[in-house]
Image (cartoon, rainbow, N blue to C red; front, side):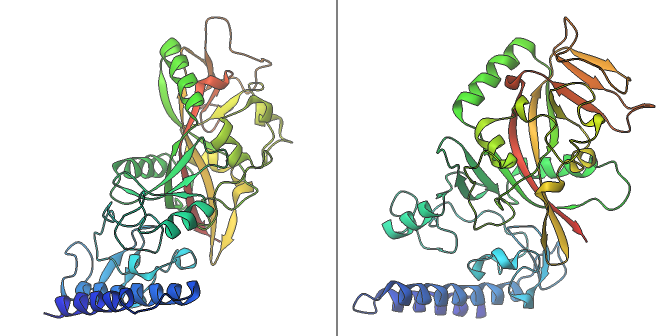
Length: 360
């Protein structure tokens, strides 16, 4: 019925563009690509009106990028409209998950893959200029390659079980008064091979693997702005961690550097199982977007080994006591939330990057 007619019209327009005779200037081609994408968006929106998802109110749809539930007539996602480069993703029906892996790897293009994950060499080159690789795995919307070429960040979709797991941990572990922030995006980090191998060796030696939060700052807009790739500035804490791991040289350099409690257990690498606590150290990553404050936070894998547990407010140390691999500050009279501190840079590896927001 109407669904077939809508899709048929979109395909007809696509064929018309492809067989339109002489080659057009790049600008003309981009305009026609956008026109085709809007046509496909319209056909998908019509299909959504016909067959609404049973799990959502009639006519509503899930944004596949930030998971916000939107009204069908909105056309674009109310939360991440500024980042949207092609409307067809916003019109995906309720419960939509991962785009087919056969789709061109350039965001905004829904043609088939022909050239190394892209529809054309031109789209491949355009993606490379933006620091993008073609997604090769299910549940990945786009892949940002690091400035050194040694690491990558996979933007996960709702189809990814890892995404759901990390969001659940963040939400449950907030443990602070007030409303828990909304997770907008989750990136799975593929660290440089040397860092991954170093961590694997250390973990094999000490054991006790834990998943912990780490708040930090950023000087660039990567992760918050989908049009920005990771930067190469050593002064950007976020991108430095992505490319070089957690460094003790930067210990205590965050927003609470003037507070003695910032390094209450000496110059180590600090993590917490409480996402709300790590949020206190993410203030320098904050960006204002519309009516919301956006921040970033790492989820790291930490090899805690044998942990020395303490209720002391401070310890004048530069490493754990003999026979121990880490120090754990436990909740009590001196600590409202836990802290895990390691002193070997090989003991921690960034695994995920969260982008979350709260109302102003």
